[in-house]
Amino acid sequence: MEWKTTPALSNQAIRTVGRIFEGSHDITIFSDTLAQPLSAQVASLNPASKILTLRVFCPTGNIDDYMPNGLISFDLEKMNRDDPPLLLCFEKVQATHERIYSNLFEIRCVLADSLLITVKPGGVRVPFLLGMSASVMLDVFSGSLAISARLCNLSLGGCRLEVPLEKSMPLTIHQQIPNIHIQFPNGEGFRAKGSIRNMRPFGCGRYMAVGIRFIDLDRETRQRLLYLITESEVELARRLGMENRRAGISSLFLTSTHARKPINASNKRNRLPPMAHAVKEVARQQHIILHYLKNERPFPESILYEGADSLLHLAESDRHQFLYTLRYVGDEATWVRHSVRVAALLGDILLTQPGMAGDAREAIAGILLHAMGKPLLVSEQLPSLDINLRTSQKDLLKHHVKALHQQLHKVGWSPGPVLSNIINDINERLDGSGYPTGKTKEALSKLVRTASVIKIIDTLTHARNGRPALSPLDAYRWVYGNGGYDRQCLNRYVRRYGLYPVGSLVKYSGGFLAWVMRLGREGSPSQVRVVKNLAFEDSKLDTVLSDKDIQQLGKLEAVVDPADFQL
Image (cartoon, rainbow, N blue to C red; front, top):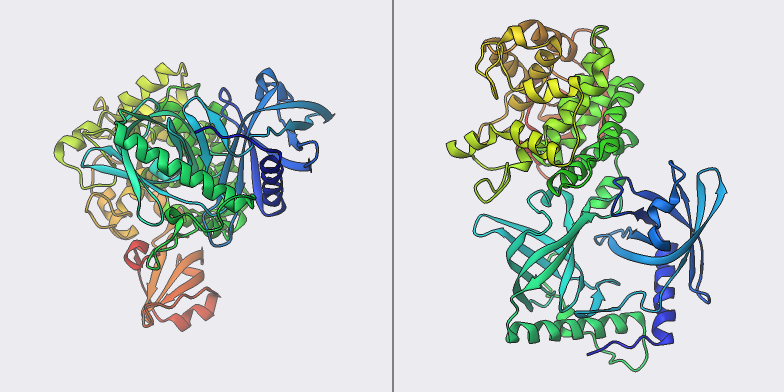
C-alpha cells in the first residue's frame, strides 16, 4: 500500500498542528550532536504558504549548529488536562534563519505535504495523535524486567515509543529486545522481536523517544502488522476530518468500558512550586547525563555543571525553602533521589565552611556524577537497582566506580581533582573497611569525610533492599557507633539539621501527619504543612501551621517514612 498525499490532507494536517499551537505546548529544537536543546516559541503559522516561524534564543549565537544542511528538527509537546501529553517529532524540516537581535533568531520552517503521515522505505509511517493510543510492553531482560511505553508511530519497519525517563535506564542503542508487545485499546495487537535503532530525550520533558526496528518478522506477523497499520492510517484520516472515509471508528480504538484511564503525571508537575521545578529539573538532567554516558555520546559537561550551579543557587537564595523542596524528589528513581539529596545537602554544608566553600561546585558535580556508576551496571545479571539484592549482585555493584571511570574514558572526558576525589573516595571508610581500594583516614580528605556522612545518613533514612527507613536519631546513632565515619562531621551534620530535619514527615499524637517547613531555636518544627489526618484514611489536607498553632496537632511523636502513608 502507498499513501498519496492530497492537498486536502496536507491542509488538514496544517490546521491540526495550528490547533495544537493554540493550546498549552512546548517546542524544543534538538541536534544529534549537541546535548543542550533550545526552547522555541511560535511566532506565526501561515497555512497557505505552509510556513511555520519559530522564535528562539541561542546562548552561543551559533544557530547553524542546530540546522545542518539547512534542516532543523524539533519536538512538540502539547499539554492535556486529563490525558497524557501529545508528543510529536518533526525531523529534518527545511528551514532558513534570520538574526533578529544578538542571539535571538527567527527560523522559517517549510512544512512538508507529508507533515503527519510519511512514506518511508519500510512503508507508511502513521503517527498516533488526536487521541489515538496503543500501549507497549518491552521485555528487556527475558523473565526479569519489562518496561511499559506508549506508541508514537508505527510502520512495517518499526515504531517509535515514548518511554518515561525513569524507566529508560536499562535501554541502550543497538540493544536487542526479545519481545515487544503492542496492544490497542480493544485488546488486539501483535508481538515481535526488535532492536533499538535510536533513542534520545524528547524535548525538555520526562520522556525518552525510542526508535525500534522490527526483526525476524514471519509472513503471518507481517500481515498482522500491515492490517494494524492500515487501520491506524484510516483512523487518523477519520480524526483529521477527511472526506471519502468511513464514518465509524476503527474497532482497534474502541476502548473497553473497564479500561483504566492513564494518570497524567504532567499535571502534578505543573502544580509544583517554582523551586521544586528547579530541583526536579536537576533530577531530570541526571537521566540525560546517564543516557549520554551509556550510549557513548560526547559527555554533557554543561548539563552536569548546570545542575551543580542550580543547587548552589537555590541553597543560597532561601535555605529553608530549599531544604523543604527536597522532599519533592521522593518520587524519583532511587539513584536519582539519593544523588540529588546528597548533592544538595553537601552544598548546603560546604557553603558554611570557609575552607571548603570554594570546592562546593566541583564537589556537588562529583556527587551527581558518582551516582551514574551503579546504573551503568544494570544488565541481565542485575536487572534493577530497586530489588532485594543477592550477595552476588551486591558484589557486582562494588565495581561501580570502575565502571564509571571506564565509561568516562570511552567518551573522552576526564574529571578534575576535586570531582575525582569525590568519585574515588566517597565509599572509602576511616577504618579501611570501604571500597574500592580500602583507604584509611590518613588518605581521606575532610571534604570526602563530610560527603560520606551525608551519603550514609541519606541511605539509612530511606528504605532500601528490604531494610526499613531509620529515623534521623537512629541513623545518627548508627553512624556514631560505626568506626568508618568522622564523628566531627557527624556532629556538624546533627547541629545543622537536628532530629526533625526540614523536609521530613512527622507524626503528632492527634493523628496528624505534617511536613516540616522550618525549625525553631530549640530544634522542634516551628512551621509545618499538615497533609493527613490518620483518622480519615482517604482525606487529604493542605494546611500550613506555625508556632503555637502547631499545638493543635498534639504532641510531636516521631519522624516517619512517607512511603508508609503513600505520601
